[in-house]
Length: 315
Ligand code: TXA
Ligand code: MG
Image (cartoon, rainbow, N blue to C red; front, side):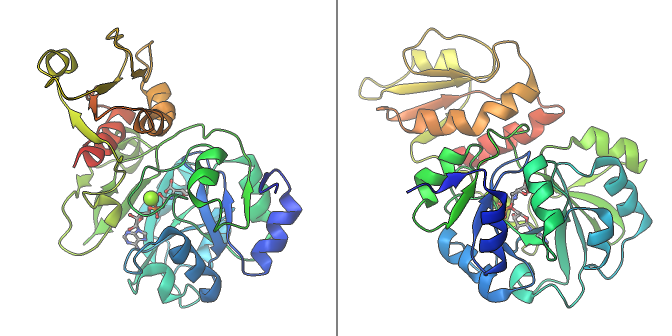
């Protein structure tokens, strides 16, 4: 069965029929359905085994199309959209009734973004509805950055996987909203906080422990590998590893000369490290080891998103 392919017409047909299709974006692969059709959207939750209190991001081809689905598009949000779309930035805006409550888990805001991938842009432009799409992984596991990742885990429940190659950014979009008017980052991601603050002209608050369910991507158990993952000083952890344990090593740029290891970026480049992160976690998770020993990367730019995912994987 040929379930992975580049057939845009097939993807369009299935989505119009209310089926779910995995789509490439620059961040991670998404599991998409017609955002205006609750009976299509429910299939996403079923395929992912995702609780319905966890709202979805809605993907649009352009600022103009977003405008029709939101109640207001404040100038502060517009400035960020103009600077970063299409790209790895998600904005939380007041929704219109046209967005079903199932998509937003009953919240008054909807998460919206314009993804930067040629195939998915072409797809969105040909549809007359936007696409609700969470990352295309079983709930709680590492996000997919290659079509084979989707095939391996959700192959049986997805009608079609649109093959856009490996994702160019590799970590999810940055989620930004306004909490009582204050610029707030709810999830670090592919657009750096530094770049957002520069455009916004103000410091962003980082909300990592929300009082209500704002961005459950913040849930501690998210992005978890099956193997235990420990963050620390790798050399030290190798030295003190109990005899009965076998370790795989996930390093930023250094070669620790161990049998099972993945170096995120030998050149020490954060963009390359982000691009490789989820493939690295999946690769090490499949090895005959009992534990993954990881180290944090420099905590700046994309490094914040990488460290965030590592910490969640270790929780
Ligand atoms: O890069 C990405 O954002 C990818 C690609 C496919 O676009 N999508 C993605 O979706 O990461 P997902 O569902 O794995 O993560 C979306 C996060 C969830 O943590 C969800 O709780 C949060 O966004 N979210 C969605 N709507 C929200 C809303 N109205 N208010 C607060 N958080 C929201
Ligand atoms: Mg996800």
